[in-house]
Image 1 (cartoon, helix red, strand yellow):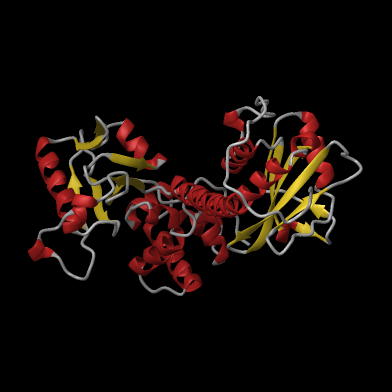
Image 2 (tube, rainbow, N blue to C red; image 1 turned 135 degrees about the vertical axis):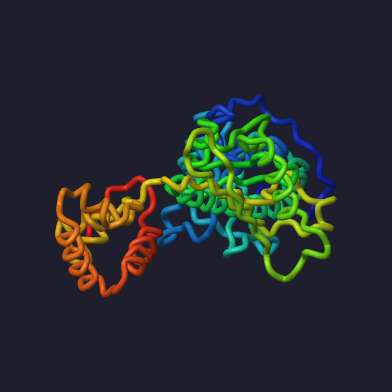
Length: 377
């Protein structure tokens, strides 16, 4: 009866053999664990999922999921992976090979979002001696194939989301602007390193019980009201445009105030808060120190415009906020000499005023934020 298209019977659970996982559960990915569950359901010794797109020239197969009870089963499954699979019109087929005479493989068609594939399950030959067992396995096969295909799509989507998450997190880590994601209940969901530094130093804003709290009590009330206004704006204040709020938060000492910008994420819209997932970000809080360094990548930018080392030094002082007179004093040159250098910079950068020059440099710097060493190309 092995290999025949027997009529399907009512599915039952076959007695699985004692487990002997080849890897620790925490080391196995989601698809491997799912395949392990399928194998236990039908009593298979090993199993793998094979997208047909991963078959190179019909000979090399790269499973995207793999599980085996023991090393012997693993080796037998790898032998059967080299066998060309022929599926019946019912979507399954038996696989044999002289290299694994004590084992049989069942290949089940597996529909996938991007093409097709098949699920390969390994059984010991003595498991399939009774026709009733074969019928029961084949009864379960179509459903298991469909589930395996759906699980493959889920794992592919999760892997893509994880890669996007890592890329976005890397971009946020390089930003000099403190960026904090806040939930609808005002608790903090994420803070990038720049924001974490501000919170750890309690520099105008600190974190208490996972809630943002400005340094002064008066600012606490204003900040909480601003968060509420952005997350759940009043009906009369709602419009087609997203509403962001900016405020200045006092800091200890004689430092200039901390700049805070609260912006919506677009995940909530007032009336939707009752069913809103509290795990999602409802607002973005940007924190900026006015005195943050502004020279990142400046040398490369100046070199691209053909500025000399002295002219680059002049521009660096101006971008950091010093007036031309103090810049000349810092460079130990006369004010007239500084003006001469500035005119040369204007000519090389195609600007005509000091404000135009600063805007140009700051616009360039938006593309070179982060802890990198920049060179002109």
